[in-house]
Image (cartoon, rainbow, N blue to C red; front, side, top):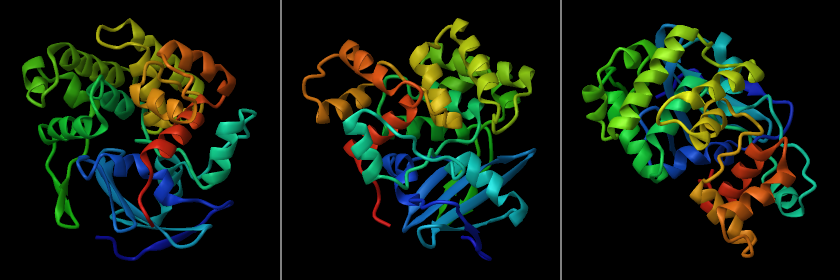
Length: 290
């Protein structure tokens, strides 16, 4: 694994375990990320090269970064993937405000690109987190060679041009339906043509591009909002219709019985609905110890 750890001093307290909890929820099934013994590991693309980086907590305001690339990219990577430049907003909703106090070190873990957010969201339509991670791993295995780290294989995601030029039959081999395979291919074509930057720092441009994709077969509002949330950490992304989010909110508010009830309730989080969703999921599903 990593050698030559480099230390980053953060501006405010940070909790890597809570931030990386969505990685832990997949149960070591993900192709690109993992959480083991307090270390978060990531494999992906930096420019036109496959790279890997990892992070561990070295104190409330210190994060150690290691990997195969030099330290000049550490902060950009940590901002894009671990959200270290963000902070939890204030909430008027008393329940969410209490969760935010309990999980003050939470940041917005994401894939680091809108394109990868779309790939994960399309694969994850109507299936569990663990099942989605398994299918996405099979998809990644079809396109790129593995990197062996810590006695397990990681696979970088397919590049947009790889996915965009694939056949439906090839993509379906990972276990998705024909409609989802076609949607994945179209997303590859869209991002090949757009040349959208890897990290999508322009949030409004990313939102515009994402919502343009609503016109594509197989892509609805849940997919778009999930891509924004898990792709680039959009603070207000709200995946209406998410069953796990309904369970999480109902756990605190038993009177919320339907998706319509949840959508109405979520209006009070406007501007930070993505943060509220992360807090409720964390409350329901938990996080790794240390």
